Image (cartoon, rainbow, N blue to C red; front, top):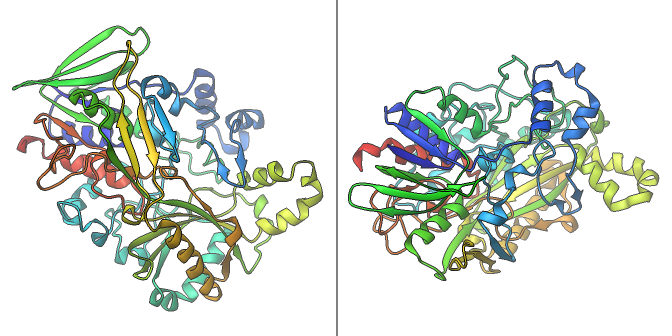
Length: 528
């Protein structure tokens, strides 16, 4: 029996590959899920026409998000914190100048991601122990079970679609006007290192009840129709296969490998009853913190410092020259709507990735929270500002970003060891981010928009949730490194398949490449 640990994107992707090859697969997972009341509301909304939705139900799903000028401190799903619940108990951590999340939920952090999907470019993984050609068939395989919203445009010159089955989710009036302006200056922008196009999103055209996107603006709270991809959706389909078994309520603590099997040691989440499983092979897909902790616990490698690599995250408002008017009243989706890839050797020899967002009601709530009782007085000015306002979420390659040191303390008196994470201030990230802002400002006449420099926010290491590389793949792995099959030094039957094994973290979106790499490793199971 082959075991997969974790139900997030890497777990389901490796499971799909194994099940398709006919192997018997058991997935072990803590499996914390959305609470019953909110799940009942979502199920009711998912079968109704959007015009029939109860506003009180919608408000129930929007609670707890607290936006400020610095963004949203923690993203909830349908008003719930279940994606992060109990991680402090089972994956305790101490953070200093770092903000790295973990999850014990069914579907992992795909419950809260932004659904943006863009493959890695060949020149951004030159330092990996294999080339992009090794990932390409697996991008295609992943996109055979993960829906894609996309448009054919100039992005394809560096970032192929890897799918013939896609539809366009469309864009808001504000974003369509922005794209028209970009296209009008296309050649000039290309010559200055800007490659742009419509965003690519893991969003289905319709849900099982035949409902398409209602343009309801609730994407960042949780789609009432469940159109945004969540790996729990793939898990449901895997459970229809006779050679796949899902076992939730399990916390895995460590592995013990012998010549012909791996002993998985853990306990029941609810009862704390000890459990163990005998595996021919194990695929570890628990997320970067959990997977790294599992390997360190299994090796009893306490107080050894590893390096977690990160893609520097930043937020930057972009103010359009022209107002579209009444953006707060438009029906729209609120996921990323434009991608801009910046290539500029004076800043970095790796791609700089920018995701552009149009209006969402969290902007208005942020203004309310900032201005308090004066908001009513400033409402007209706020609406005029929002009519021109776009938001950039940007990422840099880990090569030029701060890293995070990670070590695990020894367990004591029945309590698990604690992960100590500390971000460093090294790298050239701040200089590069300010260089990106200056580049956008120099090209404001071509963009028909200007960056709002004084509202630039540069995130702490880990804050953008594009982290990994604690157990990097190498052609000739050393201590705390893995081979190209994700096997850490000292293991033959244990494969880590999430971002923990990425040698570097390119700036473009991470989840699609995590899934493609996990699929690559699991597809080669017979070779190992």
